[in-house]
Image (cartoon, rainbow, N blue to C red; front, side):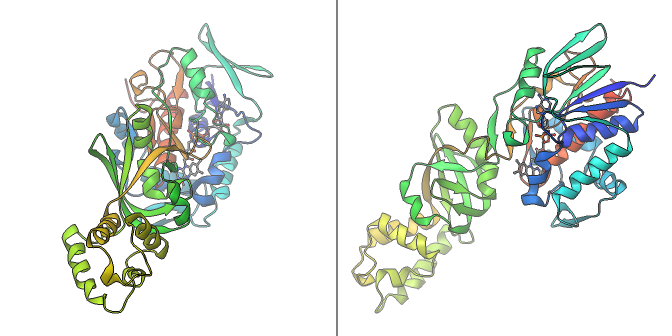
Length: 411
Ligand SMILES: Cc1cc2nc3c(=O)[nH]c(=O)nc-3n(C[C@H](O)[C@H](O)[C@H](O)COP(=O)(O)OP(=O)(O)OC[C@H]3O[C@@H](n4cnc5c(N)ncnc54)[C@H](O)[C@@H]3O)c2cc1C
């Protein structure tokens, strides 16, 4: 008899689990809360969908159990991702290791997944938000607002709390909790940070290559380099996204968090001091503003002069040495105090989720037989670069195999 598998949530992980289970001969039904599946995929990678990365290992992830993540991404790795998508007709390209569809259209990634589901006769039930789950004898009863479904096994792939407009509103965590699962603290990740300094308005729109150090309790707890984007409320850009989950956990723990920003990361402190020495030859006949021009973005020069108490129109020969020193210090150690982050609405992922200690390597719950998890609902989040979708594929594959009765790992 065909195994009846119910997939709760038709996002990246749910669709992948559905396809995998159907290929194993299961009768698969997807229950999706929104009016169509895969809404989030459409906004991934700025509409181009960065669906994986050739550079893949445990360092690309955060979780309370990175060994668990490592085992999963080894069992379904980036080569498997490539051959899966090739197999369903998608041409792909790699940009410095970052994988995209060749057509650079996220909508096409969703299309090929949908067409494969159709070809496998997977039943799609949209507008079916799951509200309750319980077991009756050895069957899972799945309630939606309008009807009840019965399955032999189910995969919860409801995502986390990020970008709730796309359907992931955290209801999956509630379903998991009601069945006794522990969910670790969930915070927005890959998200913009807000800062205390009002004067950031004057430099909003500036982009600069920078090294960012996260300082808490006097200790540097993280660092990232990349294109920093300054905004009227704080900071954004890939390096900020990467540090945001750490910052949000620190803030939740009521810790003070400041960023030390090096806007001249190609110079060591000594090299920069030498450079300043050499530049002092330019002083002759120049105002302070004219003298400092060329070091950084013009808006930053004006801001730092103001912060250091330097008057731009006075001859630089009259500028106080201590004030000039202050200015130079800001170029390599500009300190901003973080007050928080943008909300889940703006976050690309949520950090935290169902505790991995309650899940087997086949993604089965250790508390409820024939119940599996896949994707962001689990306590796994990746860095920017295709790692979150890779997690959706890897965990979706393992959950789909096992839910269909053909587990990859013999336990
Ligand atoms: C703007 C943006 C850009 C991103 N770019 C990238 C990128 O380029 N590369 C990358 O790797 N990652 C990217 N990500 C992250 C990546 O999209 C997610 O990590 C991934 O989609 C998670 O897949 P998932 O299936 O676990 O969850 P989701 O994609 O969130 O899917 C969950 C699904 O479950 C449904 N659902 C929720 N609750 C219920 C319920 N109770 N009943 C029924 N259905 C329910 C939802 O409607 C949704 O369809 C991006 C995210 C965002 C928001």
